[in-house]
Image (tube, rainbow, N blue to C red; front, side, top):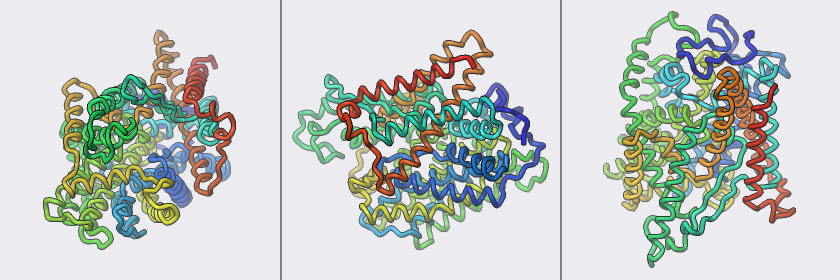
Length: 636
């Protein structure tokens, strides 16, 4: 084991990626891809994937699995098996994260097949999962060095750094481990009290009557505030700015202008005067947000093209190269990337369980690459939890469905083919984000990228069927699209595909979103964080910015003492990392309770006037923020 007691200062920047010395030195050889780590990683991937499938179909979001996977992996290896091997633990957490990423990629779109009234089989789900996972992992490979090494200190990768802190602290012990475990306990208790016992709402909101009844809210969760603390105030503010435009600008404007209409305004089937802020957001604003994501994606990829070209040239020149590379710089060969893309194209086109027309199969590869690159970079700024997978998938569906229609495919079979094609892209996007986070952890820890890339694909393939069975089981029990299992993203995807096929897509809203993206570029504002705020509920952006504000207050207190500031920064990030981990672990536990029908929500039965009040949530949020601040600033 490495002799370090914690991550070096260079882990968060200040040195170039090439000069960074990982926790496990390059010269040190340790077991990494072992039978034990692969076995435990696959089990974790299945468990986290199944739990997040239920959670995502129920509430439209998943819980990051890499950090809780890191804690559990270290606990099993070190505490039970007496194997203090951080590289094995890293392999396990990376594989665990693939279960959650795959669940998100599948549930955001594939249930739309059921919504269309078509039959969805376990074979189709498994094939879509495996093909999408293959593309998502392989398309990050040529860009790994640029994103992870060259952009070291610029792209944060909050969950990846949090997982690295967890692994190091758990392995080394000491004060860092205590800080992390304090965060785990705090985040877990806060989650259990709010979303388990329902003692207060985790998502309070207030109606603003002077602004046409729009709402303001915040996700008062330990994980989101923790992520905000990790990413800092700047990114949080860009997201919050987009949310303000949407919720305090566009929604009141639509309500004001549409209040006198006597007929529904497409794409809604209800009168605007009868719609609340959530309905307007769902029927109108999300299309605007999708347009902004489209603009952000295309502008980002255009600006990155020179770097992408250099990365590919470098990767291609390395084909056939032998032992000159460091262990920590070895990826799967570029020939695998090319062969994998060709294989997925052929399978998507010719395999009976997918049966995507050739034009659709071509665009599967194009958009899987395009948005995998965007996803891998985006999660470096705002984290996997805020990765707008559904927005990028909608962007892909707009083109794929349009191409199918232009080539003469416009029946129900073509709509299902578009969903299958979009499903492969969606899985690739989700997997690419998770892959980039895990590769960042691996870079910081000192693991071998090639081993992780192979292990993560094995985990994705192994958990595909399990996730598929959960989807079909929930459909059999409740029905996809029902009140119990609303599957919000998949419902939106079905609307997009049907809208294009029937020529009823609100292009005006999409183009308005694109104009917002162009505006951001002209003003020098990062597009994707702003677009993300425009697309998501304001509650999420507010939660992130709250964490960023706490970080800014701590930084301001110690701005005149660089050495102390560095110490407090590391302490705060470690505490926030533990909070994210604690909430994730308890979130999985609560998901299991929900799956077996156990209701522990006593808060809705005792003093409902207090437990349901948004002001109770606000007070508890302030208590959490004060606890974070006081813990970080106190003398050790």
